[in-house]
Length: 134
Image (cartoon, rainbow, N blue to C red; front, top):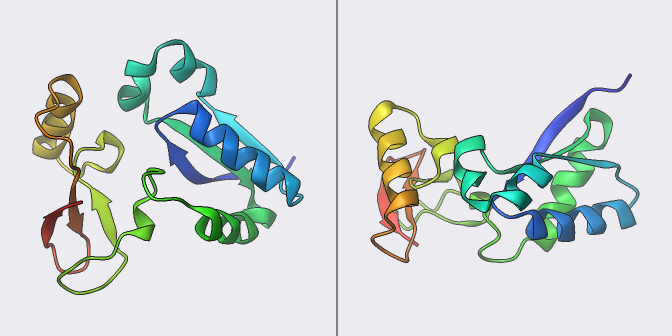
């Protein structure tokens, strides 16, 4: 049995379905985890970590290349965002519970999912630790 690896995580099943169809048209087999759970209860997306897109390990590099090539702004992938301070693409979203590193960041992510105070996302660079708004 082949092993799978998560290549992307999406907040909404529709975004994952669009990329799944693109990957399958390129010959990459895709497995979506938690697609129906998030479809039934969209508010559970933050709690369970979104819709996970898994591909065979052998197809991981090909799938990653296709996703990066066709990623649109706002798709939830933070590897397309550059840090304005150092210019690296090592950025994570502060309001996403799946990327939270400690209790304070998890609590902040949960509170912002319940009470969204702003429309713009906050990002933090893994390279230089610079925090900025998207």
